[in-house]
Length: 66
Length: 324
Image (cartoon, rainbow over all chains, first blue to last red; front, side, top):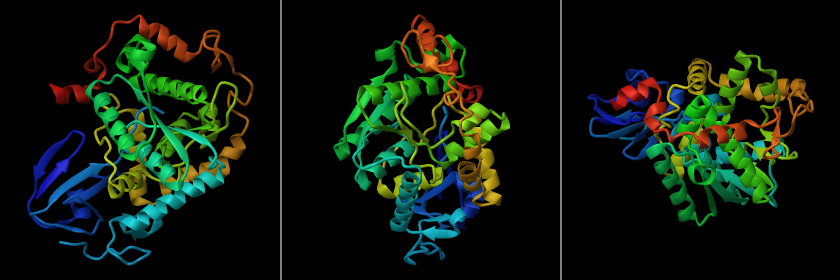
């Protein structure tokens, strides 16, 4: 599956069906700090991601000045 | 391929998100319902807004400020937007584009202030000229421009998109330093006083993840890229630390901040510089300050006479490496 990562923007490829939570664990990413979008639709942690899917892992942490 | 089994807590339809602090999953429709209710509760609990108020929303092009503007308009409030051009190269060009498209598509009134055009400096230059870290120069400038725009435009209240994560991270930092003055004024509502407009934060009961999800299910296009200058700053480190805690103990972040508001803020009431009467008028601009000349006037003086500084010169080391 093609996976778009942000900050910095880059694309990686992974093989093998896995859940959203498993993907975040494999990428060593915090679940509270990210959302996963599958083929343009937001999906929860137990959604399965297949090789044909286009995935975006979107970080949600932002902000500098406070 | 569809979700294995997560169902919306409310309608039992396919869920789009799990929120562990609520021990529940939600579909797109009921995620929005949750967000609306949480914002309404914050507004009501802290007497933030009324439907007669003329509201000015500070918008950056990021998810939180566009989401709160969207939510207020949807709820029936009268809200205009204010965008401040910070002069942070392509990042500012891009973020301004998101704001303008959002306002144009919805027929909303957007005001724009440009630091370079209107005040004679930009954030990279201000950072170098004043030896402040860029986020400090940025925060100071935005606060003062927001205040002035709200007062000049005779708005009843200024809204910012600070969310639960923002406030918990600030609280975390203030607590690590036991900064009593900052702790005492870390409130979701700051009343209008001489020189300051009323300021409110309707998103304090909603997390960043929930706000990003709101934007996704509402089709709001926002700038996902982080400000290149902010990368690695302390505020982001505090947020990441709290999310590590929250992943092992869901709801801990919300309990930390909302518990502070409920049980600690009343104890600190009256301890801020403003409350103890330490503020007086800046001799140049008349704004409230604890010094003879306020920090913003000092920043303008030093920055306006400084040669413009390119963004690359104030990037953190990590960002500079990625560019090279």
